Image (cartoon, rainbow, N blue to C red; front, side):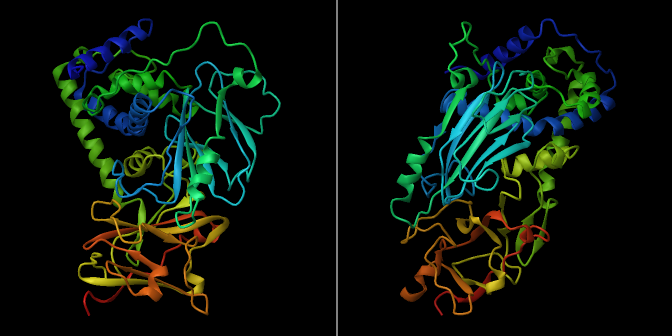
Length: 468
């Protein structure tokens, strides 16, 4: 096993060697100034570090750059890698390396099914979407180009997306109806038709003589959580065409050794400066984590998240919000793509606990989630640890794609309890764990009226004590 010290040493050497010809900035000698700069720089860099960590670990575990990786099942109780996973879509993903040339992605025609190709840049801005909401059922061929590409757009390309950086993450969500027999197999067949290739391959040109190798600094969380974040930040800045609006900001960071491909050596700082930077990182993380309660509104026991994800125009200058969004839900969707109300309490303001009470949600016809016909809505059940719990129906979410029973007036009652509410009501039953639970509603492609003002589901109400 490679030692942690060796990993860190290799990383430092790689950063220093790759930047031999960089100009060493003039560093501040004032600890107070260093602390102020480091706090601002760490908040700016935090989502980029989270993005790079994910990129490095996924490429290490799953596949090569520019090639799709496909998940072949919906998440269930045995999948505990992430918290609050969805039970609505299967994932595909591809990390694009645009250093040499653009990447072209081809999508088949996808009728009567939700799907979305989310493109995320190195800052974690949502660059663009290709899918049911934005481009329609297809077929579609789109190209993603990096900051230095200046070639001609070939025929057959329906859309071009330009990135400020060399790395772009494409996250694909393809809808599956778990209650419809054979639907997963249909989606697996669709996945195999997702195609990613370099522009040269797409155009049928010969393979370039000198192939490009993606050489990534090894990621170590302890390094990223310390003054060592500067080394990662410098590497990432070297992969970007820094936006004009942020050039002065990045130049200001240079007083603590930050800049595109700047050499990084923590021993070059005095002890007081190192201590000031380390203290700033702790304070910055506290600020980021504290934002969790400030980026949404609470109504009827539901937390309604605001617009915390978006493109550069939306997120311009909102560096603390961007960092908090990356902490709370890296690669979250724009509200127009998916709206995520989370239930924190019942209608009485009390914790949801199915060992004590049965619960219901009563939707009148005009209270049903405002969803576009191209999308759908679901309500997903989690235990206290925000994971799925096995139940006799193997049902972890319920929604408008389920075989629900509606009232004659168009109303809908959902039953949230551990034991069956009875055979006549099981179609509308979302089983709970035998204890505390959490709920997330997902509205895929909400209607505009559901976003201004933000739609709030009806409160979760007690329906009597367990055993009554």
